[in-house]
Image 1: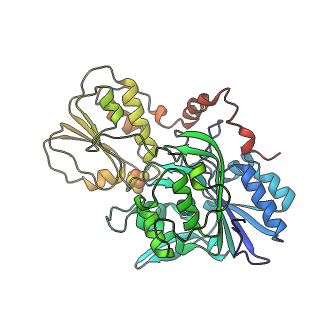
Image 2: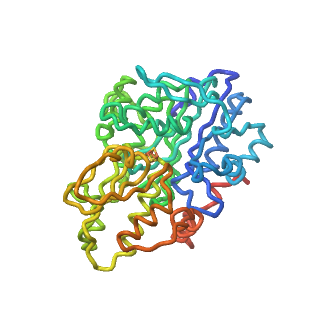
Image 3: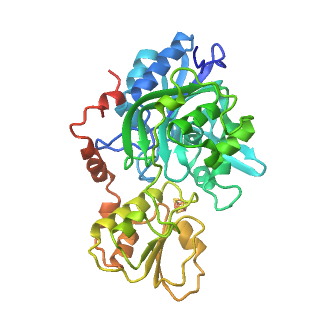
Length: 417
Ligand code: SF4
């Protein structure tokens, strides 16, 4: 019995491998459960070659934390050892940002700009990580396909439209797929993903299927989620002809029950979603930090996390003066607050004509400007240097420290010897 993930692999196919690199930083940072292990990437290349495949490219479009800076693809490929795969096996390395895009209609009237290499490949090997996601609960094979889109299309996926929302868009990404295999790398799994501030575990699981939906359904169950509770997976199931109870998916190898372990997807919020539960537990008064929704995209998410952390660390048992933070593309100031802080260009634009009793403080730009974020914090009595909000290498060091001396977190998985 085998999963037969390469069941639809054509002979002499031009194959693209899509790992999940998410982000690349100059300083050492925790890749466990965040980035696909190089071990799985190398084994995939070897396996494809054993099937007689010689035309192999690895493609990824990682987050540019500084959109004006140098593309990071080259550095990440070097850092993860992929250059050795290039030398040894002739694998091509493609940074999606430096490759052409083409427009593809994924639903009536909705066009996305998609990496042209994917659209012309014969076959895709999708290598996501077995991780949770703060907005959509799990981020596996379907979500990994977003890495083939250009920036504007990624933002478009986080639409304010309540029907054609992020779930709708992720489910439609299946329309981009050539025949494919999905191999979910669960050597490390991640709670409160998808990035370096999450909590990884060593889990030693690999899930493989020739159907991305079957792989994601199984991955969801392994992370402790009912696929019926994940809107994009429910829609993808309907499109692929599966039922959300997993009937029709045969699991071989170890059973889901044997390996399943609940992974929390986000820090919990209070019941009405007005602030993180941690703020309540600390006894914070006079502040709302509304729960981000699916309209928030990549460039605002890290800032939201940092603002919450800074507020929590700076809190000194003194109530705030009725201040709230708003983010994404839908939220509106509440009239019972004296100050509304709008995070990001979309919030500022949505509420530009707002007339209300409260003071409006804007953190404009996309990505939001760190100087304005520091000013906004100052206006509520918290003084920080703006560089604290942009110095990702310092943040990386802080998150990396947690793993010192823990031998199950082994960086050798992210190199190729
Ligand atoms: S400002 Fe924020 S929510 Fe708006 S497009 Fe940029 S990252 Fe997305």
